[in-house]
Image 1 (spheres, rainbow, N blue to C red):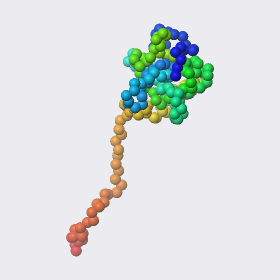
Image 2: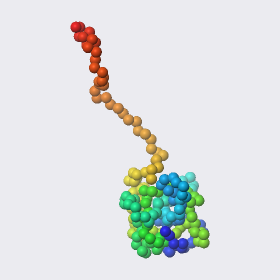
Image 3: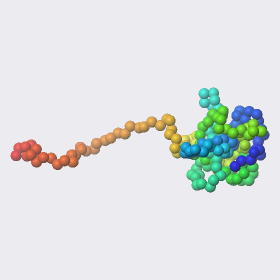
Image 4: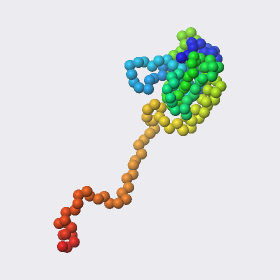
Length: 186
């Protein structure tokens, strides 16, 4: 899926300090469903870098070259030959921001290149970089209502349901005739 040497990037011994949105990293992205196979190393797009409690956190988007149909709203396709070269991708790849996760930069699932000592394999350029900016706005603006592949939002709380009774409840059992006759005086 990716070439061993980045086409538009130089090696840096501390790649974590320079990691930024638009970088493509080698990462063992978890499967959608639990299974026996361990996650394979795949190109993964860095959507954003955040700092939480003094620790740098990366938001990563799943990358695939399979032709499986996906919702286009949160996709970042890389198809141009020059863009593929700068991203160090061998074939057209789509990064799916609907399938994303947040990880600390010291996560052992990052797979640094053994010689270059960096997990960064390339960068988005051209139309793919412009598309990333649009997708980032959708995700940060909150217009992405879909939960990342079935994971529950921790901030979600159930809302109380108010029941209104517009009319009295009717019994399914017909009234006893003797009760009606005694009430009417007859």
